[in-house]
Amino acid sequence: MALFAVSLNLLLGYTGLVSFGHAAYFGVGAYTTGLLMKKAGVAFLLAFPAAGVLAGLCALVFGFFCVRLTKIYFAMLTLAFAQIVWAICFKWNDVTGGEQGMPEIPYPDLAWMERLPVVGDLRTSDHFHLLTVVVVALCFWLLRRIVGSPFGRILTTIRENPERAEFIGVHVRRWELLAFVLSGAFAGLAGALFGIFNRGVFPDFVYWTKSSEVLIMTILGGMGYFYGPAVGALVLLVLNQQITSYTEYWPFVLGTILIVLLFAFPGGIVGALDAGCRRLAGLRRA
Amino acid sequence: MLEVRGVQKAFDGFQAVAGVSLAVARGEIAAIIGPNGAGKTTLFNLVTGHLRPDAGAVLLEGRDITGLPPHQVCRLGMGRSFQRTNIFPRLSVFQNVQAAFISHRGRGLDLLSRVDRLYRDEAEALLASLGLLERAGEMSGFLSHGAQKQLELGIALASEPKLLLLDEPTAGMSATETHETIRLISRIARERDLTLLFTEHDMDVVFSIAQRITVLHQGHVIAEGAPAEVRSDPEVRRVYLGERR
Image 1 (cartoon, rainbow over the protein chains, first blue to last red):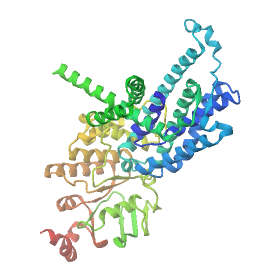
Image 2 (cartoon, chains in turn green, blue):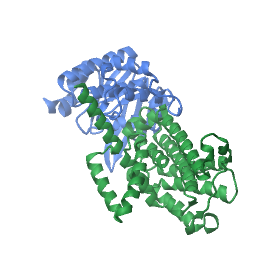
Image 3 (tube, rainbow over the protein chains, first blue to last red):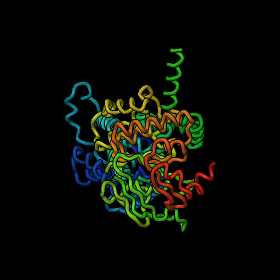
Image 4 (cartoon, helix red, strand yellow):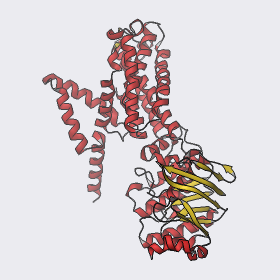
């Protein structure tokens, strides 16, 4: 989930595009890997990158139309495309399992891990969790490189001022589309991992509430910061577990937290921490 | 260098620019003046590709650039600053200029190298010539209005333009800032051998640096020539200078 949120941030935090249909690429990735591994028996090593590629392709097609619009129209169109994907997943019984989804996705063959020291004795599920951690760390590293590259700098100019960006010679729509595709591809990878972790892929992976959930994570954590959305994802999941254990009004609590956060700390959790640290550093210097 | 042939643009039936022609020679410093609403900014937008003319043509170094999108016009060697300050406010001063270098040198699709030190020397040299070097690390949105305008000039210069269009470069500036900016602009134009076309409402500025002035009124050119000729033109005195004195 953290990877999902960080991938969205490439669009939201760096390029300034609000995608309201990011779950589509998450879902496409999850279904791709799930289908390949369960029905076709393809190895994880192939099925996993396939999720990224297919989600990226999907983002390329949808993005081609979306980047022609701006602001709220852009957001609405991404939502519309995501709902189309959801409808396909929901209705295409033969392939996606329709409403029932696709349970019992096999774990990848991780027998080689048994030969490793220390971790060799763990169960298969733990092996997979370990693999997930490594893969996610790798994706984070890649995304970080992208954000810190000349390409990433151009994206921030588009966020700041698309008109000016045009007149330093940037073909704004092309860059937006590329950001959209990259973001979609990483969301697809996140979906692939989550599908296996969850031991099943279901249509609500693609539903619009999933898209809003990831938006909430990003805002909660702080969208201007690279790891902000990851923190947001963690906090949201932990809060969800903790609070639902003693009240059924979890959405109410979440809403209150979000309102307070948006007014008091628009930079999110990481933004507030960052500001706090700077103030402390300032005091020490004074 | 730049030639504009009878361009026209109407908005909802209002003829903002009604068949304007003008030419700017290489190395020239030319100005467009006219009262508010005369069509100066619209004319600029037609030249830079932000608007597509209803009729007429725009030529840059003899090449027809009519209707090309702004990013291509920019790549062909035209730089521009905007009337309302147009920078990247939440990037540092250095990053503002650096981004323009990245784009101009075609490194914008580079996904893997580190951006931090890229074009550092070029960007710092440019900032030094604008007198902004000490402020390179500051968030550009917090600079004074005058400094932001200078930074915008820097962004435009990073694209190494041959022709620079400045839309009211001293708008909203104090007298001192205006004076400094004008000195800066004329020095840079000389150093970099730039051709300059600017709009301005401050008459002192126009008559102090422009070699050639075009007067626009209600979308038409009503006079054109050296400052002295324009100043003594009876039509200009009536519609424009007369209103102000």
